[in-house]
Image 1 (cartoon, rainbow, N blue to C red):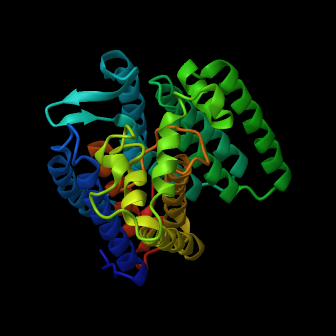
Image 2 (image 1 turned 135 degrees about the horizontal axis):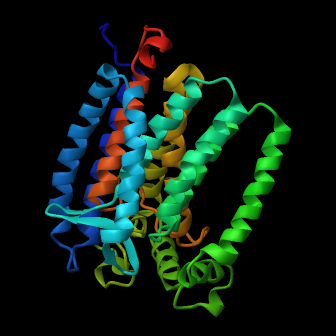
Length: 365
């Protein structure tokens, strides 16, 4: 086996991951300081340790195993777990998204994210028939997205739809096909809104467009906007945000955790936050341009996963998008999401390593 060499991109990814993880942990401590969730930071430390281990394991596994042998069993396992979740999963807040375990709730859909990146990347790296591959990937995605939507978890199902869409856009060369697919997506969205969404999910969307008609549903968003707008240049100070201390905003350690950070750290703190993410996306895009074969497609998948979650969560916090419940990577509390993001970072790190072997050796049947 030939040795891999770390690149500037590898170092940049590690620095970014470390900085965002540290910021997320400190923000979590502040978010729960005056609530019943004060034990969560200690649990999050455990998950961060697990995450670091998963990053190392992911890089080593991608380096040493033939991933093609694990894709079909992995897909069957993913669909099976999502199906079993609807039967025996823990019900909380009207949703059935977690398995109850001795170490806490485990959310299968989070672990399916990095697996589908591996699956799609392998398929695209081994095919020159764009239309056929895209139809195959659509076929593979529908059971995953459908089962997750049934939990119900609209936000995570959107992630998988966006993932396959980005892969298709990157692979498709004919513009007419892209236009046709766009029209089909619009029609599917309209059908989903009319027949596939729960009443509370529709209320979130209507509240976004007309808050006056659904003031209770829009409450979270309104409080979040108030917290962000009141921060000023320097913010209220660490662990001194009023919206957090006095419980003005629910879900301050999950969906709206960024509002806590924005209120306490202000405009300058948000500049740091946005800069780190801009650097992360820049590194991933450069890998997409420079890498070939499976490493290129893995970078595409990582970009799609991180970009949609970042964009939707930030847009939700500042009132530019409806509330969907998507976690903000490295900030939102959660063991499953912390572990899943670590695996995705491991995939990205492997794609960033210098490699002089032929792509055929990496993805051989």
